[in-house]
Length: 305
Image (cartoon, rainbow, N blue to C red; front, side, top):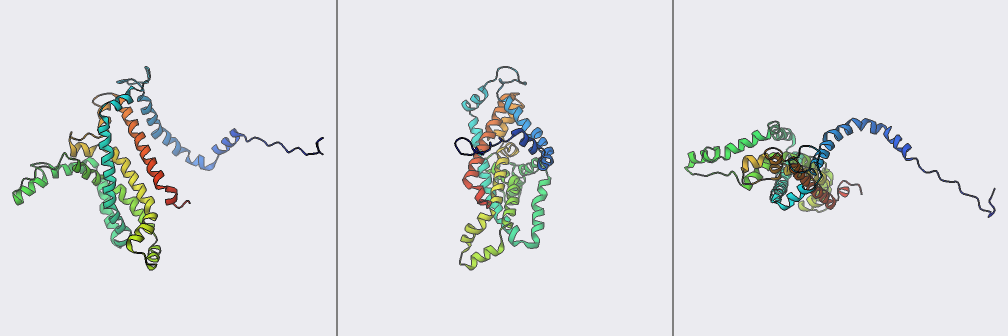
């Protein structure tokens, strides 16, 4: 049947029920299976961050969420010389990533392509130090580099009669300690990325006339880039929060941002300011990581487009 105008009326479209779809999503087996991990993540990771964020807006030397909320803690960070600690932390972290990549890539290539049956023993040698506390390993370097009574200075004095002084308390020594500690976090993802490069694809490129540099740039590096990227980001984030290297090997000459946070939470008993510094570091780190991810186009590297 038609209307007076002779045109049939289209059926009315039913609006989707948002609550019904949300309920179906909650009953999804995938969500149900992941819910324990999600709850643990919210309680153990997101919850403390929310508490730290809340503390960053309360007045200085306040130990509870009472009083008028303020942004004076962030103003204090900008107006004071905390930027020096941020500069040291981010500069040392970037230098650590570069040094770790320069060391890890040849070793990873050997583990993935050259060492063969010796790859497992070499990997075991690299893994064993991780079972020892970071502070213990760094203190071992402290004993080696200590002036006068250190192993290096004492051996040089005994063998050659030379007084080498000390290599401690310098940016280079701190960087050496950070590379020593965080090298495995770059090495293992890079090794995994290089192991995914097909041998026949490299041989085909060589048969077509590509030299070693062209194979590295056009075949090897793009395929291995996800592992390299993950290792670099992991090392960078961990190195920003490094504190033992600066305290043991750098003394009081270089104050990194993690040391400033520790000082505010312990000696100064200024939790709001320590929380503000922590949130400031988290935001800056997140922005830098997002910018790197966008510039490197991870979707293309992972072959999604």
